[in-house]
Structure formats: structure tokens, C-alpha cells
Image (cartoon, rainbow, N blue to C red; front, side):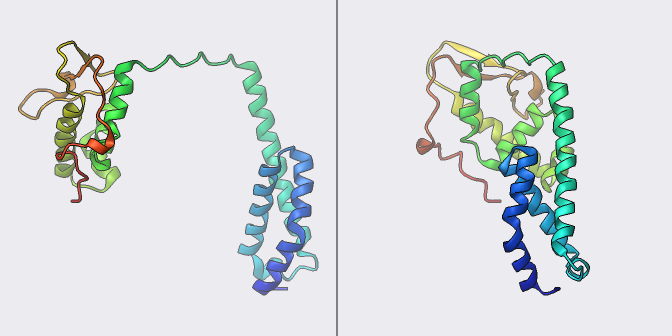
Length: 208
């Protein structure tokens, strides 16, 4: 029993019964199916050897049960930890400024949006972003420079009542010698965030 057709027959003949057995043990049908599939995958990877056994299904069953036992132990450890730990405090509701900022970020082209988030929210250096994205450092600087301008434009409004989004959300500035980490983006209170359909012509996807 070493052909692909024979493996397929083994899988179709025994998958359901093995999944039912593991489910009865773990109490989770989806998790049981995942583990049995993993056991069959391992059998396929060793099919030249496993297919020669007198009862290949016995090997698959043993692997599935070993996986289920390991998963059960990990689940028990996790449950004990959660029982001893205090429930985390509910996260505070996002401020209107933060909601507006996130909505505006969605309208910035993907590459520049990624650079902005990595640099200003994840505190990654330009060289680290370049390594992560596979882009040149000069390209990353360009993404940040253009992204800041686009984001500021999206957040701008004619209302004179303004509020600053500082380092707790996202910092932006110009490249004219001013430290961007100290330059807040200005957002007007009560401003309506532009809809995606009304995107500015300067906020087009960077095809470079």
C-alpha cells in the first residue's frame, strides 16, 4: 500500500471515525479534525514507509492520539493559568481623534500606510522598515514624507476648533529640518473624515 490512490482510500475510509474518537476526547470537533488531518499529513510525508505497514491506519491513529494528548495538556495548563489570573480590565473606548485617524489611515496607499504605522506606532527605524519590506531606505523615507502629507490633508478641515494627535496615536512632521516626532497632526474637532470614494488626487496608490 504505497500508491497515492491507496493513501486516498485510507484517508476517506478512516478520517471520520478517527475524528469522532479524538472529538470525544477533546470535546471540540474542529480541533479534532485539525489534529487528524495533521496525522494524515505526517503519514503522507512518510508514505513510502508507513504505506508498507500491515495496518497504516494504526500508525495514523497513534499519531492523532499523541497530538490530541499534547493539545489536551496544553489546554489544561492554559485553563489553570486563566483561573489563577485576574481578568484584564476592559480596554478604554477609542477617542474620536483616534477613530478619525484610523479612518484617514485607511485612505493612505498601502505602502505608505505600512511605513507610517511601523515608524510612528511600532517605533521601527527606517533601516528596520527597509529590511522588513525589502525596500531601499530612500524609498522608505519617501513613503513617510508623502504619507505624512497625505494624512495631514485627509485630517484637515475648515473648522477653526482644532485638536492635536500626538505621539500616543501617530506623529507627523515635515522633512525641512523639524523633528517629526515633535510635530503633531492637526485634526479639527467634529471634522468629517473624507469617504474613500472622494479620495484626493494626491492620495493615489504608489505604483512604484
